[in-house]
Length: 202
Length: 411
Image 1 (cartoon, rainbow over the protein chains, first blue to last red):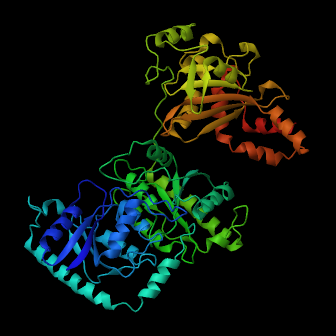
Image 2: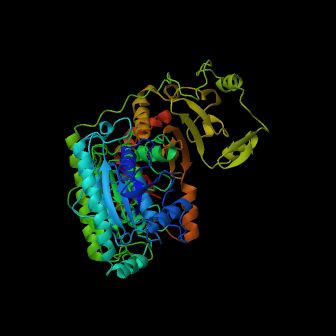
Image 3: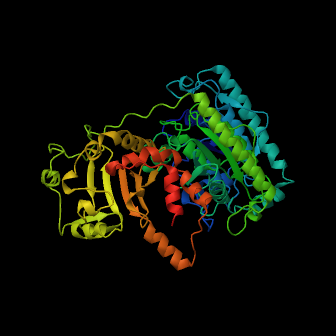
């Protein structure tokens, strides 16, 4: 069975993105094992010269390297990914390369109608940077709008159509993960590019 | 025009910082720009509101008081750095200082891209409803291969790049003015309570402010320490006596007025008639209205409004009534707490002549009677002087700029 990391894309105590990942963890428990990872206590990125990651960032990096894939659920702050998630991604590309060629599925929830659409597009672009270089599942979007009303008391998604969409996307992701394992011709080059990326003062 | 330049990186060595410092220095004829740092700003967390922390309030105050903002962003992971995003999240959560603020984006990067993607993201972010900044369209300034771009003095090497930067900064200055016109006339500053009828948390109540012995009575009311008692300061420990020796030896006349417009302190070393601006021991404690003649109160109010609103950090006036052997300047310097809130005025009155003479002697230089150069220097204060010379007008001085510049030329 595949082992995935579900990365909660915010440091907030209350997050419907966390709820969405918790729902997926439960709902897809017969198809994959999803381990939720929190970014709340990851310190501010400050480009330390010795390239030593804070313990928590290193722990997340190690977990990701081990995992078969990563699901990131992001809210949208100011038309973009929250600083706390950007901060974690900065660490996860600083002398470590857990994302290189890692299959990634993006989901997102928002209180309003748009379901974090712009943050998701932003996140795709970030994950495509040479020092991250993830394999993002193409042509797939899961935008959960009005997320405060989306779950019942047991934490289940109420709208059946949303559940069906999510199930379809998750099955696609399982397929995408196995396909990605064959997309390995550029891996050594991608890895080298990431390793050679210079974080010199920019 | 007052601008704030935000360094989008928290790194110790940042070419974006070098770029902003270069802009501030090179284009000081277009605007006055203060370069501010984001490294003390905590990571945004909506469950842990730190809007009122000094680090965020200081930046909030600076932006609110500026006519426009220039942000210099590097590019991390194809986007802006988390630290810069974090600042913008704080500035769009409980407070919104960037709303309707003219903003220009510049960026430097190590590679050829010059932070192109980060700049586009930054535009998108600044356009979000909680931020609502007005970003100048077009006019991208992407400085790629930045390692080779500056010389050792921190100046841009390439003439063409310099010219281009100047042309878009000129456009930004016009952009700021056009937006100001769109906003309509500036709100009039609130009238100043020169009679100090209000109260701040340090105001000593129950003592007549006008009393000759206000100091003694107020000291008794709050049980003020004196003599050999130690006071802890940032940064050091002195006794009250030592503090007095220290302040008395300052080669200038110091006056402290708090944000309630009450005169609280001067370094009393000379009798009133020997001072550059006379003060008497009995005046301390008075509201500012009682320290100035009626006709100059308007000017006093104008100065305080400039300092309180942040329109100016300091107002300087040359008072040429002391004869040709002195160059006496009244400096009204705004004081702020760590969060950048206005807390009062530090007025220091200083004769610059001995300093200039010493400098000329040390360096072997001579003043050349270039009228243009000198009047140009003081002309910066042109519109202030009328307003301010009145403020110091205990001595009833009213001089215009021409008098000021020609006075200095005579030396």
